[in-house]
Image (cartoon, rainbow, N blue to C red):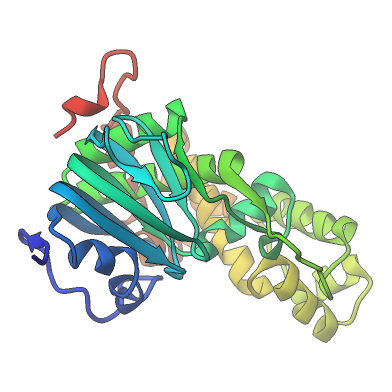
Length: 326
């Protein structure tokens, strides 16, 4: 029996800024939809991110995923005590247990009894900026680990915070987007690995990549040109543009624009500077330009983004249990 969808729009077309909906509908989401699972909640969270809550009750069934093409973080919310992965006998699910399913993985699961879970869907490209900025690694070096039933208190807490947000209104989606980005950073820090058998060819030397990254971070409030970066790297503009894209995962202009938005997010979250000063610190010529770029990237103008973040707090992990999240 196909999954029952309550108030969910068909997965067609393109979401904002990211993952093609048709790509997801042919992967983990489509696999779940073809089982006897019930889809309780679903939302596109912006930036090509999506989340779903599934409930399933079955005597016994086999479910398989085969190179889905996108990453999935799965968090068990309830039940799952008799669910196991083929090849890992004796390991069973339970509330607060996590699974990371990379885009390249293949797995089969024996599902028995009651199960309720949260899925977060995202593309490998979501690690691009984080790999360079947080781990000093090239994006092409890393992928998500294939892990079954691991524990991570911070990820569980963030999943709980995501569930507590209303996904049906703009403010709730904005906060859900922020929480999901934080979860992806934690995934990169704790669950990434080097791609097996990878042999890096081309690209920038690590020292040059690091020098360029640091220069850009220190000069986001100023005009940065390709010529400046080429001079810093001792390359021609043409050669740098090609090598930069290989090592950073995107062209220099896109990287600088993304880093400005990320700085703006951090400054707005801190809540101390006037909006005009935030715009200046991020290299925007005026408030109109800043507001337009920020809204285009996040779905909300800077003032509203800050108000929503400052008015919402993460749940206290000491008093919130995952089985109680609704």
